[in-house]
Length: 458
Image 1 (tube, rainbow, N blue to C red):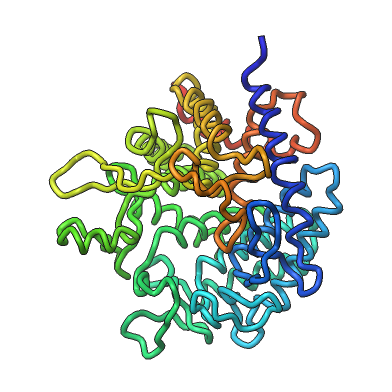
Image 2 (cartoon, rainbow, N blue to C red):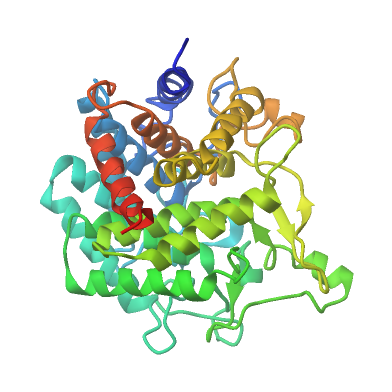
C-alpha cells in the first residue's frame, strides 16, 4: 500500500519544481532594467506592460532566497534573489525621503498605474523587510542586513502609531501618514481604505518582523513584534474566530451591518469574513510566538485554532472541497453566509499549509483529512497541468481563469512556494527528507513540537 503522505509529498515536489520553479525562473528576470517582470500570460508570454510593484518584487526575492536554501541549483537562485535586491536598492527605495515606493515603471521611474505615483504603503514596505531578511538568511551579506534594518526603522519612524498602537497604511511621498482630512490628496486605486488601520498590513508586518527577528535580536524589533502579536490576537480577531478587516485609528471595527443593503454591498471590501486571511494569520501568529520564544502560549494557540476551525465550519465547500472567498454575518443572524463563492489561488495554498501544520500539532483531530481533501481539490481545479503553475482561482467556480494571467502585481510565487515548501517538509519522515529540505523540516518540527507540548496533559 502506498503511503498517502509520501504520495502527496512527491506530487507536491513535482508541482513545485516542474509546475512552478522551472516555469517562472529565469523567465521573469528583467535583465535589461533589473527586477522581475510583473505581467505574464497563461502560456508564459511577456506582454509589453510591465509595471513593478514593491510587493511583487519583494515576494520574488523572498521566494528565490528560500528556494536557494533547498535547490540543487542554489547558486543560480541566490543570484536571482540578488538581482532583485539591486532593483529594490536602486529603483524602489526613495533615496531622498526613505521608504519603498509602492510602484515604479519597468525602467524604475515614476509610474501612473493604479494612481500610486510616489506614494508609499506600509504593506509594501513590510514585504520588503520580509524579502531582505530571507535574502540575508541565505547570503549572510551584511549589506542586506543593514538595508533590512534601515527599512525596519523607516517603518517605525514613519508608520507606527505609538499612542494608539498599530500602524498607518497610507504614507505620502515625503514620509507622512495621511487620511481623508489631510491636505495631501490621493487618487490611488485603494483610496477607499484611506484613514483606516487594517488587518492586512498588520499581519504582514507580523510575518516580516518574525522573519527578521530570527536573524537580528534587537530589543525594538522584539517590542514591536510582541505588540503586533497581541494586537492581532486580542483586538483584530473577533470572538467568533474571524479577522475584522478595517478599523478606525482607535480600533473601532468598521462595520456596515446596520447600513442599507445597497450601502453594505458597496462596502463589502471593507467589511466581510476573509477565510484565507484567517487561517493564514493563524499560521503567522504561531510563527511569531515561536520566534519570540514564548513559553506556554496557550492563548495564541487557542485563538489560532479557533480561526482555522471557524474557516472550516463556515468557509469550506462540503461538495468538492476548497475554501470559499468571502462570508458575512448579517444583522440578526449567528451563522456566516457565503457572499462570494469564488476560490482564489492564494487562499487554497494557505489552506494546505495551515491544515497540515495543525494536523501535526493536533493529531487525530481530523485536520489531516481536510488537508488531503484540500490537496485533491487543488490538484483537480487549481493546478494548471497543461501549462504549469496555478490558476488564479478554482476552475469549478471561475473556468475563465483557464486562460487568465499567470502573473500580475498581486499574483506571483510567494503563497504557493511557501505552502508547497512547508508541506513537503512536514510530510517527510526523519531521515527520508528530500535533499535540501532538512533545514526547513527541522524548523517546522521545532514549531510543531513547541505547540504540541502545550496540548499534552501535564
